[in-house]
Length: 500
Ligand code: MG
Image 1: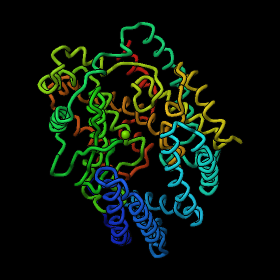
Image 2: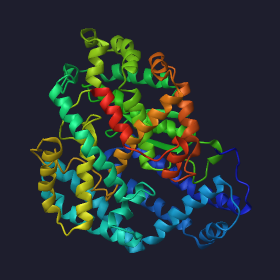
Image 3: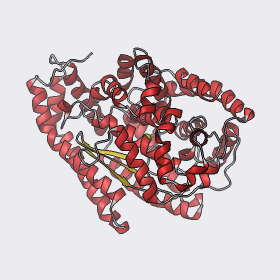
Image 4: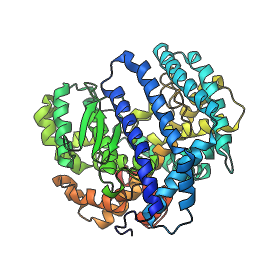
């Protein structure tokens, strides 16, 4: 266990002093990014993307200044405590990644991805894959080159995956998915055959006014102890997200679609989980590179914990039912049990972001398979829609009828992020493993949730995970905090127990 140790080494102190400028640029970039999603008028996008591009070049320049790089190099041989070693690990990794890419490549990547994002939007507006296809070919090509620049041991996918989930290999992800495919498919078949878990619910069709659900979401966030107004905000954006400007300013967004209210509740709860991870960082890390969640997978485990383990539990439904009833007039037709079933429907369907807990990982499995093919095999983008359709049929028994329901549904590839998707499954599975350990320590977990007493749960998460920031790489953090390695079996058991 880490004790309060602070930063003592004089070279480390010098590094942190210099890093402050990079931190400030990142801070400004976060504010611009948040504003772009939440407030910016449509046509502001041109100037904003130029401003963001220039800022990121500036922060890279500072990071790669020889005097800064040399300090990081030099301090490696000194006697350092765990915090200090964390600083060195995080900075060395960032410097290594930045140095790997020649400037022409970075420029080309940023140009192609901003154009391909536009092309993807066009393609979606017309449900026409051919508008995106040439850009996807370029992205595939650039991604292969990126992997070569970064270097890898076994296959190119390893290099890209590591950017998002430090230390995780393609083999790890393959193992995770083989456990899932073997165990989860029979569970899904059984759920669908039994017919006890609904695949549709009348509550999906009930409409609400935005102000009504705003009240519900605020009430929930207050119960969670989200420091609204003090250290956080909630706003509205088309794609809900969390951003942290620092430990004391962490913001989330949600969306209001006007019906199917479970979606706004669960996305608010999900983003709260991300935000809590950032809010509960060790304040000693402020302005340093180790303040903040360590990887996308670990981050997603925090959001999924709140969304799936708490947000979809019977106790949570009972907790929020009176508030739902107070604000939604249709609610007097439905009991808490109805709401529970509605929150826990299982339906093999086409859209990843709308998928339930059981089918969700099959969506990721498909993307992982296709991404590996893109990097390892001589494939053209035009062959991918067919592979997508076949994959969906095989994994979930559904076939997209349009490109928008299929290969055009996610923005990730247009952004040039290949290797990102597996972190969603890592997080989802890890959340069940965390829940197991948390519940063994906090025996009255269910009744705490039912009473809306979240303090002990938050405290456990802070102690075990949040306060470490990015000191340890993800695998080490998991091993240290849970006493064992990442294990997908916990998720299988959780789903089995919940649904069967
Ligand atoms: Mg998330």
